[in-house]
Length: 270
Length: 316
Image (cartoon, rainbow over all chains, first blue to last red; front, side, top):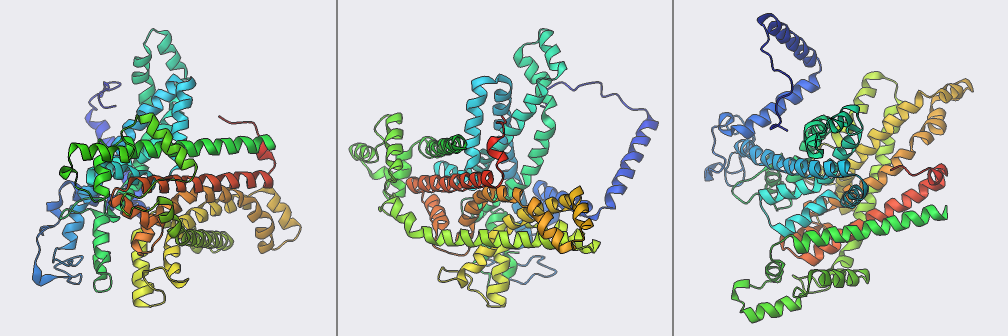
């Protein structure tokens, strides 16, 4: 979508309008802070993204540095979340794990988004038997539990962060295909699409220029919603032991590691 | 009516066939070289084999025939309940699964029972209370329930109930006591979904005009909720039960690994680790079958409860 030319002039606003806009934004932000749940979520999300982008800013411990004297230390001031069986600082590991988890989820969403968009656009715009065939396939895949589908993919292509991300991505393609198709079906009957076709635009051009940009709303919303569940699925798969290979670890791994020491050191998992 | 049932049956069979084909495509065609995965899984080092041995192994696994021939042979065998032998254990896949199925069925069954009882009970209470602060807290609680990863929740429950309180064993699969914690953990996400949907349904039904009639007849709040509100709001939950089966199956894989129970879910986890293709294929198809059968029976049940469903025009 980014390679499409920007629609409309991005005019430079005069000084006064800018001030108004900023004031408006501040007022909006203030009204949001009155809803503490939202504010908390935003802060947490910003923290996770910061951790994923620049883990070294948030912790000065090395995630892989072991210190045998400090094994399984209780959470405290020096080690915020305590340490694990090898004396690694867990807070640092969680912060560094964030980038792996977020990265995997981003790849998964990327795959789901591109696959789903292509299938959905194709099905919705072509119609007829192409549509029927694609949508029946999508229905079938929807009937399989996502985790099992991902497991099958992992069996076929191997272990690691990337295969897990791909597996999760393939698992959520059908949902995207469905949403995109529904949107395309809605958009393509709108008058401006018809007039674009009458005006002599080719099918591909109409599809890319008029239909695609106008069905991004629900698809983008779905992408953001699925981002959370993608992180969860990736974590589930790596919890089962198919994810990142040691010593790197993402969130699912961290929890699985902690399981072995639950009796003596419950803070590892938490 | 007969036509409706026939159509639904045919549709279910098509979905099953499609599920088998999807799983087959992923497992046998996606990897560049299924032979090396299979040999690895059965504990043979590929590099140590001579070309003649490789050719023999290829024909042993049936990989030397054409793609379509392989597919139809395996499909035909699967239709007869024969999913071949496990690569790793060298026993038939079906005997592996049937040995472990009871454990998983017990776990899944109990989890579904838990989630229905507590989900519906929770929604009942949440919609019955009138004290606003409590009501709004109860109404928001379910959304927390399905955003918690169940493996984390399971660990917390183990920590509290197995290690601190010592009420239930933390792992293993002997007897009912060891079933409680896993089933409780597995039931939480579905429970949250049922509660969420039912609360919304109940709250909406409370605003219907016929509730005013019921009040006017002099019924008590409890009676109205039981006789008028609940019966109208419960139908969507029935549909959801079918949808949640898939989550229960996925959840069982995680829960059985977490609680070290010998069930089908654990079998899948082990098979994926060893890339045991026939076992994974069989379990995927099995779970699709369970999913399809349960959804089919719910659809048929629905049409018994509400005859309009079967006669409604098709929506495409």
